[in-house]
Length: 319
Image (tube, rainbow, N blue to C red):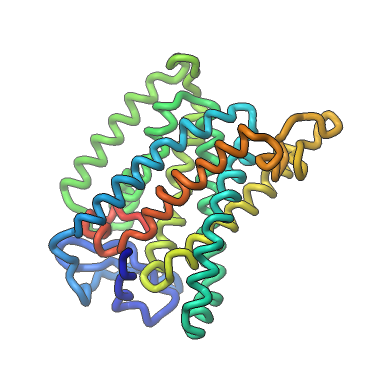
């Protein structure tokens, strides 16, 4: 639907990572080899008008992702790392078809560059696994409003991180971030109270906030690689890595077996690494999570051209 954005003018060195594009046509670049930050003029100014289809796609992506928490709660007895792994597994199966098609039609040079990027892809997958594992864990241990608010605090963390690193950030972004932080502080006063059938706990809130921090690595790496890497060649290995990491974590921490858990002689229900294939309810929920929040939501975010969303501000970009 959209063409991939042009590569960064600093793309000649693999160690460099684009952190943000600003309205004054400057970019901030991190050189991983030295740990230094530089502000440069962008070679191509951001477009002045966002195509209408970008907003339509963004709206559908936001709507799809907004239903994920409700879907996860349909399987309250499934351990958090295992449930997150099921979400990544089913999404990976769908994304594999797109990755196979794009890989078959890409040039040898791009595929070699893709293979050389696998360390970064795996790091991105680990960050994505941490994000989903922590969020589902938090979702099962605090109220739905608290979990949703705190997992969406990534823009606040990026803003305060930019300030700490002395990066350029607008007064409006600072003001909105401070206002958001005050809102989080007010929500924290509810700890110990009950929202409907849910008890608000510090543990669940901290896990949800940790999920917001964990996704930053995924965003930064995706923002770099999606400058040149085709959509499915990026999202498939990242999602598959997350699925494997979460499955291993579930096996180690939650005693997940292959199709059932390893407790009670394997009679502990469908809590196995591939347990979603043995129970109709689990299959329907995880299939929806893959098609809705996974394909339409997160993959939809990834397909939006970086320059279009980059112009919304450094705290708003999604890889």
